[in-house]
Length: 267
Image (cartoon, rainbow, N blue to C red; front, side):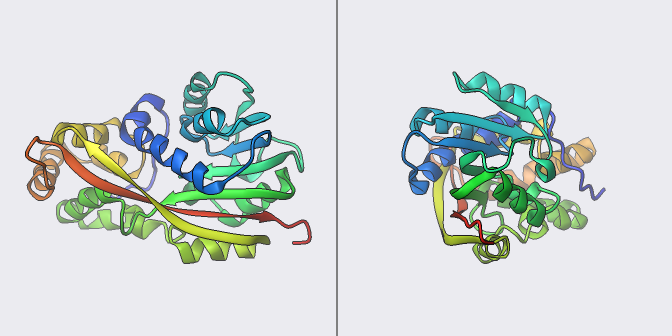
């Protein structure tokens, strides 16, 4: 039952599973990025709009555009933005915006899902102004994405073939070394990288588990592929291993690897 077809078609379910943590990380990423107000922004792989919303609220953009391949997610993202809307559905290999249009291009928690990182970064450079900023972040799946680590470590025991679906194995791009290599190869210069942590606090085990039932992304898609008895067995294994506080809450860490650089027109 090894599946590699991730589902991205329900904005509300994604928001419950990952979007609430994406919103916290988006703010920290923008603080690290340090962009002055009045710039033209593009958010690629905008999902349900966590990063776009943070840009509008905290960065005083002159203009804000965004793109995602999922029409459902774009619809959800539009609902979060008050003004400056220019949100489109499209593919990252053919970004539907003009050459050298944006001062800042960002992509949050999406690089590893693009079919070709090389093609994606070339498109990033095409639509970004010379000397503009290109920045991105991905989850540190193999180390400090703790709520997913508990899931996959238990899933291996239920179905050993699930190992190939684990983002920490499936997405080698999600390391600082490989992100820097990809940006460098694309001709992006003045590269800086770091990591940022947020707390993922679940009020109880159900608040941890129920978002996996929505079917959005690799882990929830895998869970939906299991028969009910194995879903329950996986749930019980995680419940046995995960630490709960005296009040029943579960307090974990989610780490993002962040990177930024300059669009060098000579490259």
